Image 1 (cartoon, rainbow, N blue to C red):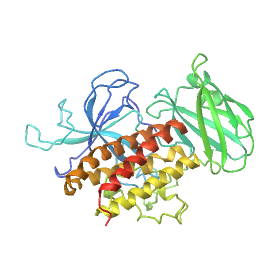
Image 2: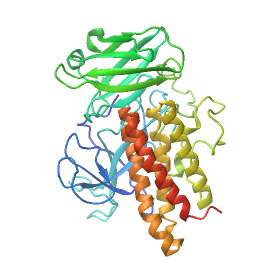
Image 3: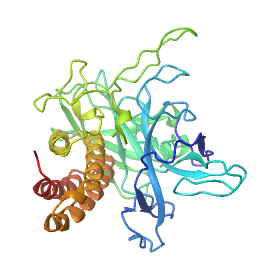
Image 4: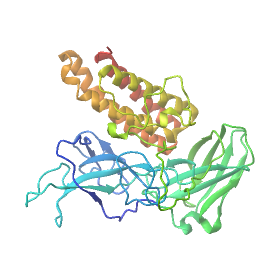
Length: 394
């Protein structure tokens, strides 16, 4: 199901050397500080270790078969479920060597280096049971809250690789769910610790509630806000036959596209809140346009989608338009050479701020903290405004 910390790196045949590479970021190698991501070399602001260069890329994989790697949405060839998007570290190596390069190259025998993908902590934040997925403030625990038909709140617990916690660890946890009216309901371990559950009754939609959770008796109590527009529905794998055609469907929980090959839909009208299939346009990855005016228009649209998700309390959805905006900023960065010198001085730092604040929106959205995500959005929106002020819109 999840990507285990000890999983072997996934490898695939190297693409031509002119492929568009993900940008180099700098991350902390310390376990527990993987969320530290900078755009330049330096030392970790948490532990002081020297940051490590890395390329992070979004790929599509099967929910329960992580060995499958695709570069666009679709269905899993093994079980027919919709592919989910995860973040992995991408690098290049030569067979039977310890080479691990952040850039493609040539091996000693003249053959091209092999591209490989390595699972990364916090790389898979996809709900496993149709709920809302958050990261805890300790940067290790992850949780998913669901609101089931009949008024049952159910919480599933994971580690930093989205692997279910051992049941004895779940049984040590204590918590409660507080509804909008102030009523409090205890969270208790169910099915020998497979998950925590609270029977809170039926609430009007959107159903708003907060979960307060202690991972251990002596640990601090963490707060997570949930807003459910409807009852949670667990994904079900379709029945497949060996010769059955597997139709391509738009995924219900998708992330940003790292290139035009990830496109699954054309740009929706700004006034839309759902597509004809019932999927929010903010959750649909789009191709990066070819012209600067189109890039700016899509960036404005993504900015509005982020604001709307925050207003709705749909924090777990924010990363989709945030990462799309990040890709748009990097595309605009390639066009900055056409700017006048005085505009270039504004564009360069603004694009860096936009990319960094997009990562922050993803991290704080996972943690479910409205104050932190709102502050990150303020930084993001200011960077967008600066970018828009220097690039021509026609």
